[in-house]
Image (cartoon, rainbow, N blue to C red):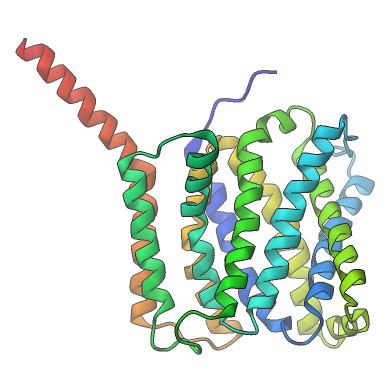
Length: 323
């Protein structure tokens, strides 16, 4: 089956919706962080997401679960799920003990740089000058936000390291999706793919919980009140199930792992807006300036190559005319 033609505009739009949902997930996670075992919270989130797809397959006539056809597909789907869900969220939860949800959102803005680096190192694809400039600019914007005086914890700390480990998990997932996503899409629909990924993440987290002696009894916190119930359902169904399904569609539309990941640069904006209303975290002019900077970087990345190619074409035309 031939690969579908890329539609980067549609893919980027969908990726931005995902960025909004994931940006909201950081302060949502902050509502429950510290109230129960981190592994148990992660298990609850992805078990709910997995069950959501089970319900979909049970009651939908249009969508049915596609069976895994070979060992390679099973490995890729499991690896994507463990890296994007288990690794990403587990380390994010650990980071809450040392830093704020806004700063965690900023660190996630490093995903474009790390994805571009992975593509360069593994596939030997050299990024263009506009892309490099855009990523550097986005990192500057992230730094402006990270060192805002209103942040509860100043300077680098263990929370930043945990958040970085989480980002590396997502970068691994996004590389797998960008590299093999089209082939997997020819055999599995988005819902089946996400079901296997969330299932793999849940099993992996359960194993970690059993090995580390996680406090599974702490899960009772999740049903203590309506706010906690709404929070875990939002994390599991909205920020996980729906968001990751949309993200796979976005990546398949663009067929470019880096351009979809660049959409994550707006994560700090959504994280801060939700954190302001949900957790009372401050939004200052310096943070807003940082957000504007990363949005400009996103625009440069998406249109920079287009203007560069246009300039080269015009130069060649002028040279031919002069000759």
